[in-house]
Image (cartoon, rainbow, N blue to C red; front, side, top):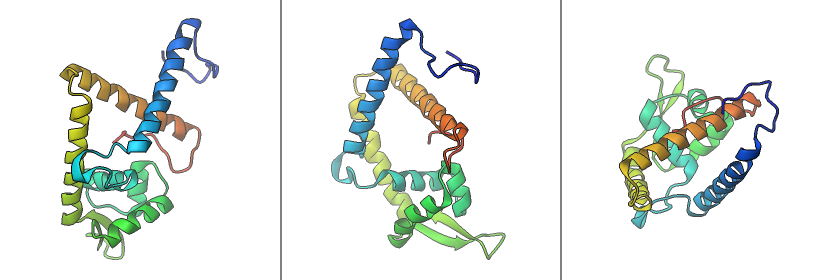
Length: 174
């Protein structure tokens, strides 16, 4: 159901209440289980990379080298959070700091070869977990779930930005 700014906070109708109660409950259960397992994957790589590190490495892999401010904006978090989260990745050699190619005074963060290798290990482990969890789903069901979850994450991101949550802006869920 589309929403407009004029709509009240209670946008449910009598018929929607039960479904929305079930949805909020399932989202809460999902969040708890995801945090408990961290949806880390399977095998030796299971739970071996925290969510923040995974998301940072993934973003650098997809978008290439960038400065802290650009990375923070891209992820919808503030620069101080990125600085704090990236420090251990630099210390362990997964991310390297290099000079900006056009402005030697500026520093950019770049996924190192070791970081890319490690990210691929974790992706493979997590991919295997997703395959196991959805092994009896039809390909169309997997695609629909991914589409709807992406849409849900984007709606959350957009709402946070509209409410002025610091360091957020509408963004893709990746």
